[in-house]
Figure 1 (cartoon, rainbow, N blue to C red):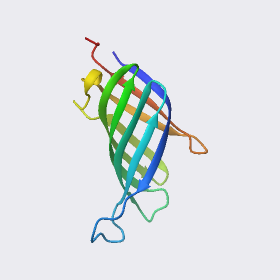
Figure 2: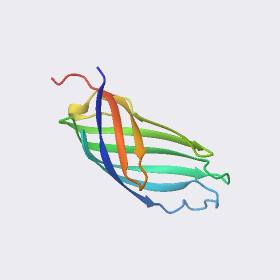
Figure 3: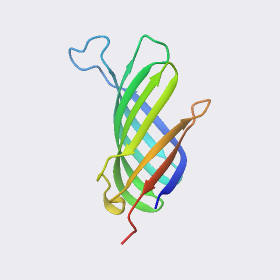
Figure 4: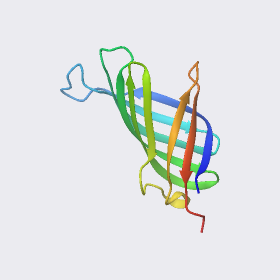
Amino acid sequence: MTKRASGPFDVKLTPMAPEAGAVEAAPGRMLLDKRFHGGLDATSQGQMIAVRTPVEGSAGYVAMERVSGTLDGRSGTFALQHSGTMTRGAARLVITVVPDSGTGELTGLAGSMTIDIAPGGKHSYDFQYSLPDAP
């Protein structure tokens, strides 16, 4: 049975130094630090790698993050994998739970998340997931 959790989240992006010997056009790297509110009451840390192109509005990024907290009252950790592409302003973003990454009461978690960024920069998430019944 698919369940849903949603709410706002805060995110802090911290640029990372380029790798030694990286060329000027090398992918940019950022540290992610998030705080989720609502049905997912959790924090996460992760890393993002991104590339911008010379064409306005075209870019791509990948990210991995480890989430720790409670999901509708069940505690544990899990990992999220991001893949985002923007083609001349048209965005496509896929965020999925890494299979078998759930721990504690979140063991067996599967699902996907969407993110909305409102005018002014407020972030919110919608998490569609499945989780085995609690023992």
